Image (tube, rainbow over all chains, first blue to last red; front, top):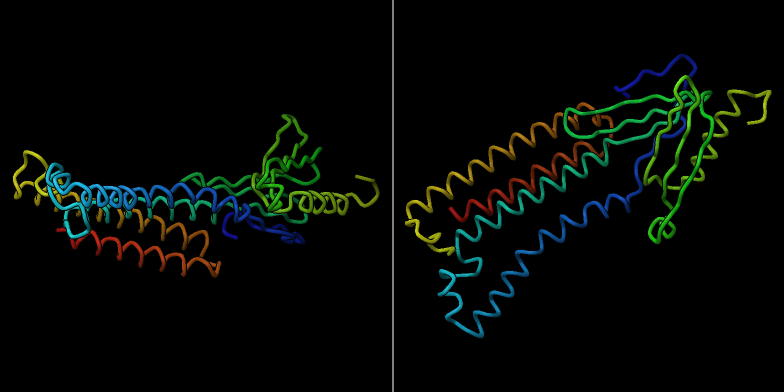
Length: 184
Length: 71
């Protein structure tokens, strides 16, 4: 891990990313937008078959035989692909790392904009899980909210993580291990 | 419309298409360089990093090649 250095005796218990369904749902708009020109071309092709003057009215060939159409389509898909890859990059470089002493929240907001926050487990006051909706319930992902105590009470969210209840239990076990004499 | 871009002549259309193409290529090359930098800096230990970069470069080149057939 380049983002943070483990303290002596500290080990990584779990590193977690968003659920793959969350990633696919973020990718879906790119896929649908990429299909739009094909539908338009198919529709225009159908109109041209019915009424050959249609293509003439719109300046000529409305098939992939038209070089400008290929150029436009290629550049359009290139933009869509860049956006989709950007989504994948952000999905993959976002991470939550649970160690024996803290939770590290690594968030890639954009290129050259990476935030790394650490929350000490002995400051955790409350953990709430939320699995809300059809897809989250079906695929088992949701939100985990961790409240921390301190001078200024803080909280952070782990959204779209797989099995939030199991991760909550893991965090609670790690907290209990930090305070073996008390019931947490 | 696609044949002559309205009132532009075919030479103007070709020039604009050429400029647009290279503008997009430069942007994609810059984007790819930045993305590869982030992958190699923050995800280089992951087995996904190199395949992800390869897939991105391959698909980008394929789409650039497809667009170039329209020049």
